Image (cartoon, rainbow, N blue to C red; front, side, top):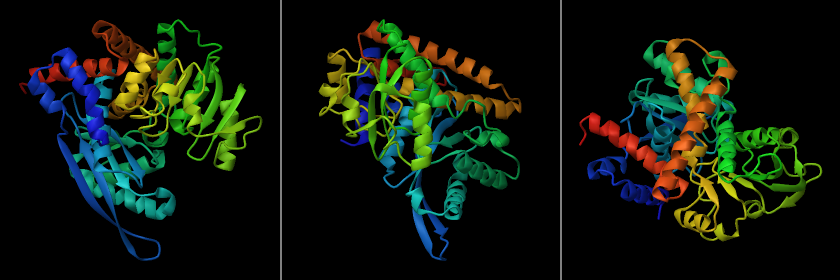
Length: 411
């Protein structure tokens, strides 16, 4: 089973429970468009290397497509199609006027110089420019891409358009029209989802414990913001190592340590643990914020967390979902829990279109209101249908998509 087929399993369950019109189901199950492009790049030594890039637009039923661009050596079209599908659902759950998209380049960016990375980035924009734009498809950062790379993309697209185009892309530097609050946005959404989930479990945030798998942007901000609410962060991991401290870690200090040493390993007062062991710790909250397919049928029964809040996309397989649900673990799914990033990306887009910018306090207030409302709708739907939160989130998304399709005359 590939990742795209895996993603359809809870979708099919949601289609059955919600009695979705067959025509709407058929439309949702396939991407509207997928594009593969060849990217020749002149390297610093004068040779030419050809990379492969992708862009998948899953849906534009609710509005222009929206989704990040990742640079990774293991990028595949199946992965990009699945992530685009999840973005469609994520935007629908959040109530945003967007469809879903995703892009990627097969590359290990650590192997490129900054000049080579910039040339690759601009070549990618050149090749996909005809299908993207502020009213068509709005890219954003993802794995191994950042505000600097978004700035290059905005500049290249502006050259092609012959005018300044800040609303074409989000996650930009503030000086190029980026939004305040964007760096912390996904982690802030994880914090909101965790707080709402603990309320439903009648568990106090203060004194709760948390383990965070993946100490990148999402994981580090999730840890810091939960720590600020009184949650004890007992373990964190990165791609190279994992650390544990029963008395609790200060994630701000761990972040400083990682910036200086390139890894969380060796942080003062911590002990090293196995990278898989972090998922099985006896904690209140587990935040998987690394990559896909981390919680499977092989380790789900060993998980002792009361609540799982998915900071990453697709960290839990359908088989694992059933085991966790049977064990009473409340899983807040990715398409709800990590929706903070796209929510603030939407705010950035709106600000760019209007050339009017909000304070960080305004951004945070609007984000929290939208995410609390989305959580409430998904949780109430799970109670109504007797389903887990993932299936309930798909039901919420499907109903919004189907309503839009109906009034657009698609069935």
